[in-house]
Image 1 (spheres, rainbow, N blue to C red):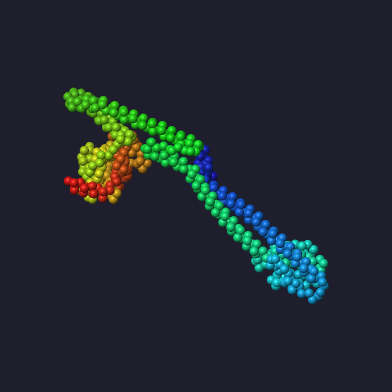
Image 2: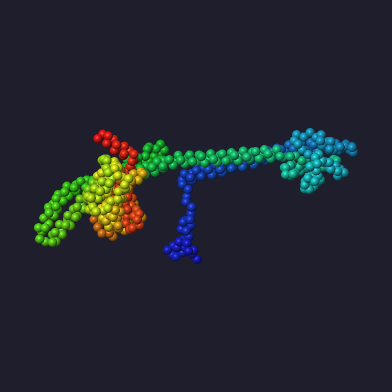
Amino acid sequence: MALPSDPVADDGEPDRHRWYQGIRPPRLGLRARITLAFTLGAALLSTLLAGTTWALTRENILDQRESAVTRQAFRNSAVVQSQLATGQEDTDLRVILNSLDNETPSRAVVRDAYGRWTNQSTAFDEAAIPDSLLQMAEEGTPSRMRVAIDGEPELLIGIPLPSVDGLYFEFVPLTDAESTLESLSTSLFGAALVTTLAGAAVGWWASRRTLRPLADVSMAAEAIAGGHLETRLGAADDPDLGVLVASFNHMATVLEERIEQDNRFASDVSHELRSPLMTLSASIEVLSSRREEMPDASAQAAVDLMVADVARFKQLVEDLLEISRFDAGAARLDLSEIRPGELATQSVAWSPTPDVPIELDADLAGEFIRADKRRLVRVIANLLDNARKYGGGATRVEVRRIPTGIQFAVEDGGAGVPEDERDLIFDRFSRGAGSNRRAGSEGVGLGLSLVAEHVALHKGKVWVEDRPDGESGARFVVELPVAWDEERAHADEDLDLA
């Protein structure tokens, strides 16, 4: 039975492959994967070398130590056996054991022919001897075994004394060897850690160096996408990367030529259309001036349609010419000192809806901004025209001062702009899906794109949002950066000069 959350394929069965894909964690980036590969490789190699070194060194140290103390134990057992072979009953074995010349510290335990035990130290007696080792010694087989006495490692060596029917045992401490091995393991662990960190550093450096050309390609692509079509990649010494650089530069060149060709075509067409359009406009104006003289109502209606279409055609050509100047990089600001309130008032007064109320921030009284008046008038006029065509008409124009600049806002009473269209409507020839359902389809989708171009030329930004009062409609906001202290200083200089 399919789980409720399982996606279902076309055949009705749950598509568990897609379900697992949905919860799959995101993959690491290429740089992270390269760094991780170097880190894991260095960690694996250093761990392998450290483990091998520790194992070989441990066996070598312990083997050498056991061999040395075993030879020592056999020498000592021979001394003890020779003393016992004398048969003197008053022989003090403890004195003999204490007189043994040992290269390493050891404690001996001896059993004589009568079964009596003599130990060199009270901590090491017959009770500490494992039964298995004792049995092997009794059977006449020399042997050795690692044991722990009070938590300390000891090597116990058992040697039979057949000539005197006795047994010799010697305890040799392995603490110094274990301490040496612990120091070695600590050093090897530290070396492995340093090697791993070094591998991570090398991986990071290698990934950065390897991916640097891709970062340059990414930056160049972003620059081209931002309008800097002349961006190219520098020459690469690596023959493998040279192919990528050459291909990218060739693509950018072809793209630049194609865009410039399209821009020239649009500009040339607009210029060529301008002359016949002027003639056509003049002819339509003559016909329109004599409209009342036409006896046929259908002829009058035809003249009205021609006047409207010619006006729309003329506006389209003007917009195309303006856009071609932006594309060609020929657009320049003609800065002058402007009063924001007067700018908004004149823009509304010259628009087809001169009765739109204007709300002016009181903090703007007496303030000037340096901007291109013609372009800002065009911005407000286009927003008012957009509200008239698609928003049921503008309901308010607001001019507000903010700490970093100034905001112009135009509100309408339409249906508003959906969230997914608020960026698209500023593209060229885009009017949004809602425009097809609105009255007034004379727009061609260039008005808001020109608003965005004019505002960007002022280093500002424009966006659309819902009305703050909660009513239905859209609010188009234009924000321009203004350094108010510098503007006031310019105004004071102009007053001083006057």
